[in-house]
Length: 109
Image 1 (cartoon, one colour):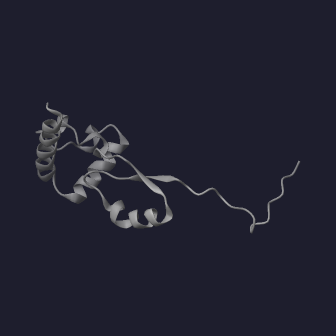
Image 2: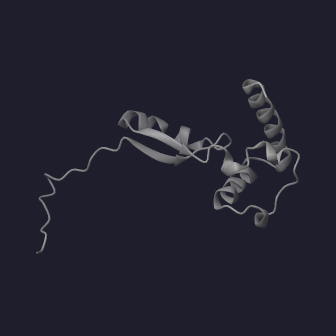
Image 3: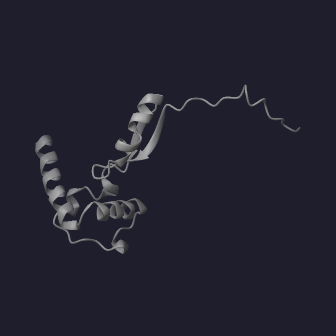
């Protein structure tokens, strides 16, 4: 059986409730670029990669800058490229030390 297309004037897609966007505590461009549009359209933004692919973790505090081959996950390599555009590893270490310390204090660790 052959399916025929509907009249395009009567065809509509469901309105999306949300959309997933790359968003991290270091890279917040999406908030500047599309958040107003999403709000106007009633679409929620759901961030992924908020912890920079796992780089925003205490295990990286005080570590030397990793080579790309030392980052096994694609999300980590992508996050590292964003970090490189944001600033250098030393600046990231400063952010990491203050952020991890503050988060630990909030949790009573």
